[in-house]
Image (cartoon, rainbow, N blue to C red; front, top):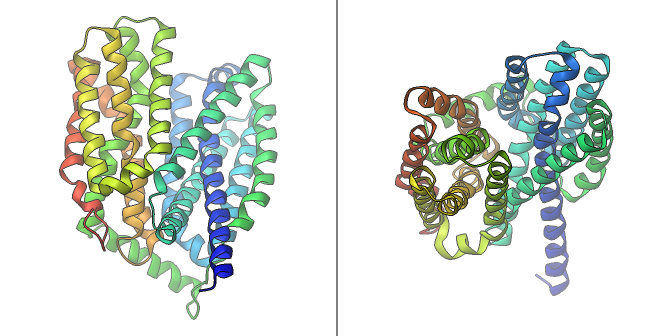
Length: 402
């Protein structure tokens, strides 16, 4: 290979990586942008908390559907058009949300949330497959940083929502403006993603059946299921923090609402920084070592968070908790993608487990809290960190020892 050719390939890989990281950030912005507007949406539509919960459950249901559809989309459209199509679908769904709020239609709003979930779930698989291939070609760990872009995007999205609320911008106007911006971003992101060769010689019906068979076979692959256990543990830990951390700090540790909010901010920042700067650590320790170190720190964090009486120790526990959840999802996705043929389907299997944890985990903690108290219920998170530690060997690279 000539020096010029090497330079050109590196430039192409860098452009590819930046485009995929931008797509991760778009996903993060999308998932976080409506959260700060929920009080205004609830007030505008005169609906209760239970209805809001059902609307948001549509995002999770749609996300799981998107995971299942992603491989069909990838096979039919190829990498570049699939990623662009998923981003444009997010934009359209956000536009539907904005229109629903402008019209005051709860039914249309539920459709919008469902299709936002489908688009995010599809994009999630596509960009993880792309990220794993970039990582393979680069020869170094990049997935944690890419997922860090998602975390940064989520922080930006929540900031946009909070800022619009403070400025008196209506949720409808905010979402419609974001829909237009996200649609334009597809034009910037897609050209950096290489085109992929599409499978030939098989009807669309045959492709769908083959994809379904491959996806079902994934659920009998013990390595994939063990990777799923890692993702189950860390995703339940992250979902529990999102749902219960501020309440536990406020009611069980006796801090003010403002301090509880700062603790949640510390968790979000800790997770994002762990992902952004975690790549060299993974390269040194390997995936298995990195998961074992972070889940050990996660267990220590849960012990401090649950048991400590001093708020500074509780804060230390919060930060260690965030480190504990930081690496399981990106490293699990990377391991799943390289664990066998048809990476999109394999990522879909472990992603489904992660989404299930995000859906079922917080209610499970809530049910336990009704019987034993919230802090005692959080021992479930510590137990699942231990389970993730125990099966971390499933993330070992196929061609290496770590």
